[in-house]
Length: 101
Image 1 (spheres, one colour):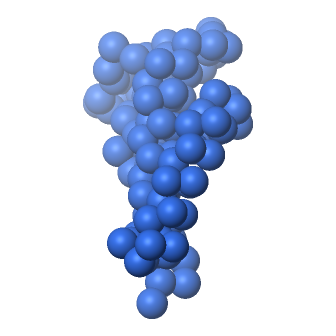
Image 2 (tube, rainbow, N blue to C red):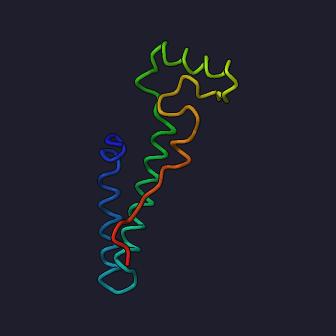
């Protein structure tokens, strides 16, 4: 997540400025503004995870993933890709705005 934040810091700042102006103009609620920023950030994290290729997985990790296949677990073509194995992380990555009213 740190790499994604570093890469998108300026873009997220721009989004924050745009939604802040919308809030001040009463065209958007503060909760909607935070949801907008959170959805953008979650999408950017998903994109980054989907494209990351380093550091390469250790041989032992790939072997464990292959062993799971022998036990009937689904193993995708991403067997040697960092952060992606079952797809659960990508499928469940979201944002939550606390303190909604």
